[in-house]
Image (cartoon, rainbow, N blue to C red; front, side, top):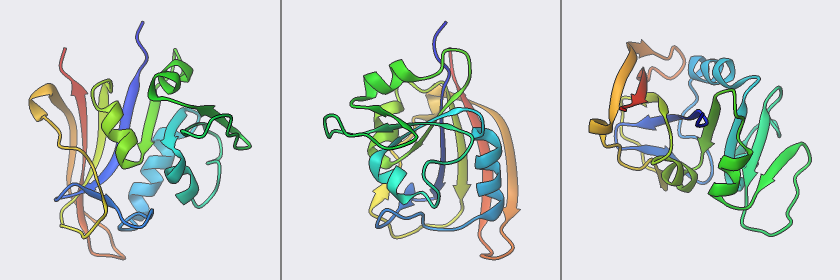
Length: 165
């Protein structure tokens, strides 16, 4: 059985995902959804994404942190020194979530089975972007549209895609 590798990401209309190692927006409902989906699962991230988290490591999740610094250790995390090693450390029976950042997303795109996209309907200035998605490789499984964040007024949608067989 192959491992269930899912990418979870919030992207702007122009594929922007971050600037200065920070998220570009704060969508309370999206953060709650992220917590609901990833709690009690393995999450995989790059070191910069780990460093950007408000609480490190995120509670009730097994955190795999990818770094290129040999023998680096972070308390409460499983360390991986390559994408291949991170995949090897992923859970065999449960869904594993790739949570960023940009270069980690890019390297996992070809092996992910599922995409959980929060599409924010606005362009943002950013220094980190999500790679282009070839939607011909993906089947839309679920869609929630016309959502609006009360605090920011931002409009967004939830889209779940499964890789086509």
